[in-house]
Image (tube, rainbow over all chains, first blue to last red; front, side, top):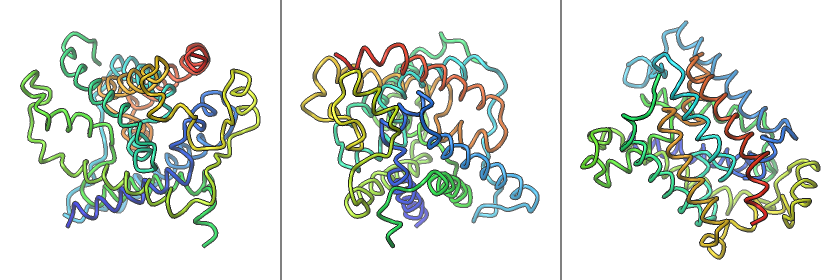
Length: 138
Length: 186
C-alpha cells in the first residue's frame, strides 16, 4: 500500500516535470545560457517553499504517517566531493539535458532512447563505487 | 481544465516539486532520485565487486516504485495532457541553436538526435552514453542530484548542498559554452 502511494507521488512528479518542460534538453540549455527565467523560477520557488515547509514542520513538530520525524537530509561537512562530484554531474547534465528524474520521465514520455543514458548513469555509479577510495572526499 | 493541457509556468511546476518532497517526507521517505542508480547496481550484484553496493536493496525498493511512477507520469502527460509538443524557449536560445546548425529548435521536447537512429553515431554515443556516465558518476561522488541537493538539501539549508549546486553550474556552464557547441556539430 505504501509503495503504491509512493508510486502515485512519482506519477504526480512525472506529470509536473513534463508539463513544466523541465525534462526538455532545450530548457536546460537555455538555463545554462541565462536566456530565460523559467528554470530559475522553478528551482527557486521549489526551494523557497521547501525552506518554509521545513521551518513550519520543525516549529509544529510535524511527523511522517508513522509518527517518526521527517527525514531531512543532513550532509557531512566538507567540500571536495560536493564540488568535484557536482562539477562532473553538471558536465553530464548539460550534455544529456536531464538530471536523474527527467531521464526516467523522458523514457515514459516516449523518448525510449534515453535508456542508453540511464544505462550510462548506472555504469557511472558502478565505476564510482569501484574507485571511490582513491578519490578525495570532504 | 484548459490549464491541464497548456504548458505549466514556473510558479506551478516549482511548487509541485515542493509538494513532491513534502509528500515523500510525510510518507516517511526522502526526496532523492539518483540513489536509484546505486540501488540498481546492488540488485544487479555489484556488491560482489565492492562493499559500497553491499546492502539490502529491499530497503531501497521504494525508490524504484517512485521512479516507476515518474515514468508513468511522463507517459500520462505526453499522451493525454499535451496540445502540442513545442517548448517555449526564448528567441535568443532558438537563434543560437539555429546558428550552430540545429533544425527547428523547440518544436519538439527534445532535439532530433534523441532517436534510435542517432544513438550509435559518435554524437549519440558521446551525448547519451558518456553524458549519462558523467551524470551517474558525478551524482554518487557528490552524494546527490538536483532533487537531493538543490531541492532537499537547500530546503534544509545545507552548506554541502550549496557547494554541490555551485559545482553543478561550474560543470554545466563549462559544457554548454565551451564543449557542447562542438559536440552538437558532429
